[in-house]
Image (cartoon, rainbow, N blue to C red; front, side, top):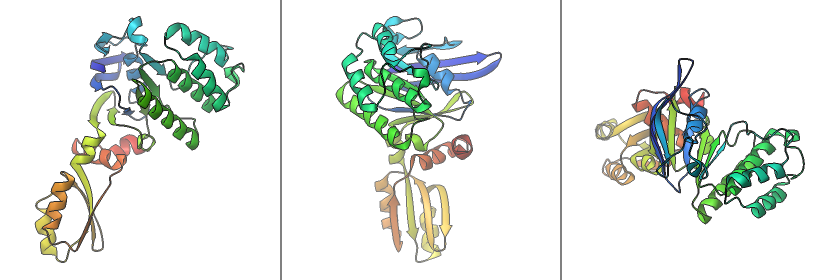
Length: 301
């Protein structure tokens, strides 16, 4: 488990991260969402021990991460622009990381290079942005590190390769103790992979919740009523987050469990109703609007 306690960091008087506390549980995919400039990169660099916080502490499996070799052996950081030694090839980077991570799987690394079509002796500086990202991810996976922290992981990858990487993460989680932490500015990118999501805005964590809990506590319903009186009666009983109307079709986003919501509609005398799945985007819009934020402006542009 990674525990972040009251983390803050400033650069030349500008507060990049402000009093952030969050817990990242083992065996779940944690998604860190935020616009460019929200503080994601600074937060990840402190969480992985690259930067020293001005205030607060990060514990990796109960060990402080900064200046702690044993804690850093458990965590692998991939920056938005992955760093490689000047003139290095994939083989050189494998040799280096093998000295840093005791459980680096050399055999598996070269098998992945072959499968991905990455030449082990070719200079990395000649690779495309996408290939550099692929190499960094393969190094992280094969390092044997328990936590893989990725800044804008899928940026530069084509749609097929994004799915391949997501499948690799899932495979690792099935086979060993592995926890990915993925930072992105795009909600839709993390829709099908995250178990828990934190929303960072202007250096502060304004929301951190388990997706399954959020999905269970908010419902989207399409319905048609036979009369305005029956409609008004039901609406007065619901905790409505959002309401849209197209002709006689009413679409509601309401708080409550699926069972509670369906029971209310069953008893309402509605001509028709259907409970629909909510997207990650819709869930976040609902959750952040309650706190006075417009996630459409924060994340979706």
